[in-house]
Image (tube, rainbow, N blue to C red; front, side, top):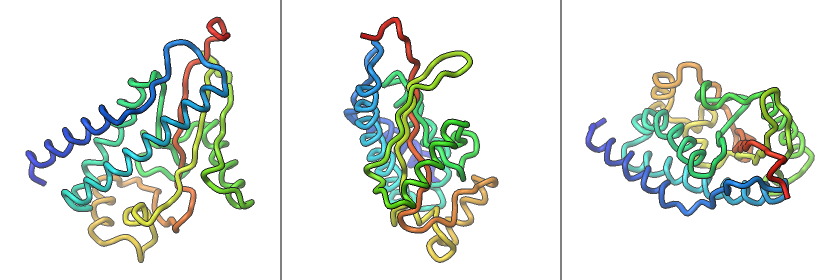
Length: 205
């Protein structure tokens, strides 16, 4: 892939994130319901941006090179949103493509299993979220999860053998040798947006 073209693409995508209009979580602590409202807004904005980012990469440089760029730009997006909103934001899965950034912790694994059960019981993905106050050894945290569902575009790189092109297969093997994120069908649960924020009861109203 042309170095200048990749650099220009990554610069454009960073600017897209910077001016995306996400709503920051304020420095003061929030009630749980307010945290949930803030998290919904951030999730909706982040999801739209990350999908558009993937589309731009595929349109501009093709599936093979886009897989390489995604390995760099996706973690960058998580970091930028986390810093901007004073949170920890990740995309997590029980079958992650990037086993470092996409690994689900114990709470997230349990949450993904709950979401899977709710979907099997007929709940709509847009109606599902998990919001809890979770004590951990070092801190207590607000925790939030919202499902990520497989779309036709997702299946280009995460679907079954009939959905994924040889170009995508080759790039995934090269850039993600430990990949587990394939074999999905339209509407399957792929993972979730996970948001985590430190809770400080001294600032609660």
